[in-house]
Length: 54
Ligand SMILES: [Zn+2]
Image 1 (cartoon, rainbow, N blue to C red):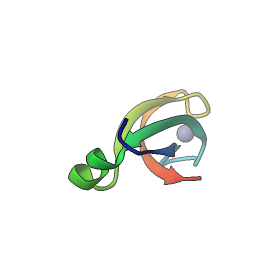
Image 2 (cartoon, protein in one colour):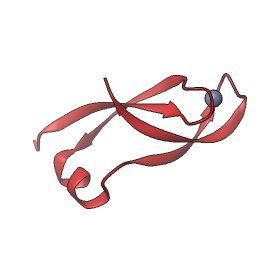
Image 3 (tube, rainbow, N blue to C red):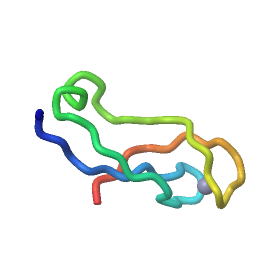
Image 4 (cartoon, helix red, strand yellow):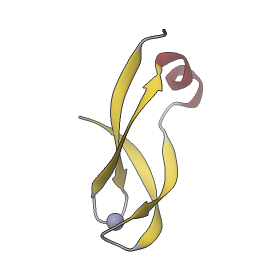
């Protein structure tokens, strides 16, 4: 198993951290900062979510 790091995905609008995920260190080297479009329950919309370390 490659080393993994826990990260949170934080809504770029309201700052809600609704998603927690892991990513492998190999992915981290490739992509840099992770940004995903996820559903935010507070905004009730899909928003870009940026990674935040805990
Ligand atoms: Zn939000």
